[in-house]
Image (cartoon, rainbow, N blue to C red):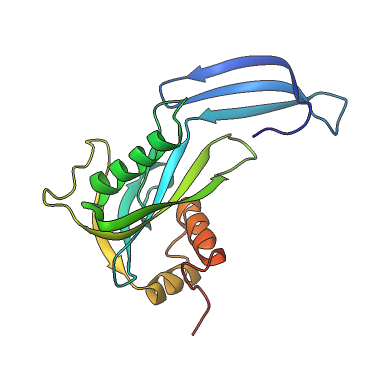
Length: 195
């Protein structure tokens, strides 16, 4: 939600495709009467899912990421294509991404817990990630059904101690995974304290 009296004076579009739009905006903010010029990448919102097994292990995927030229461990995530998605539709996207990327689904009696949202990099993009805890999960009968454009190399269960070590050793280094781990820890759903 935007706060205060923000006013867009002008906007110049540089690039647009189905996933993002690059624009230079001239904006007057509530705190600054003189407009400022800023280049912004507008992106569709996304979901980030922390899949947790009955015994408290977390599922991570190892995925190749072209912009950084690396394969990294991360939580399953995916774009919300509907710009006007309501909370039920956003939950459906989270469950779909869980199934597609990991081959897991909610077990009978399992729950999808909404954890709020965060901004991935608000200095240049409005991209928002909706965070969810999926607990308890079980393997899908049909396994993962990954999209052709994805490069998921591995999918594994990790103990909380392993996750803690991977964060400390910078093996987990993407904003989605770090953000959801911090949220889970702050809510007492995952302990990142050293033991």
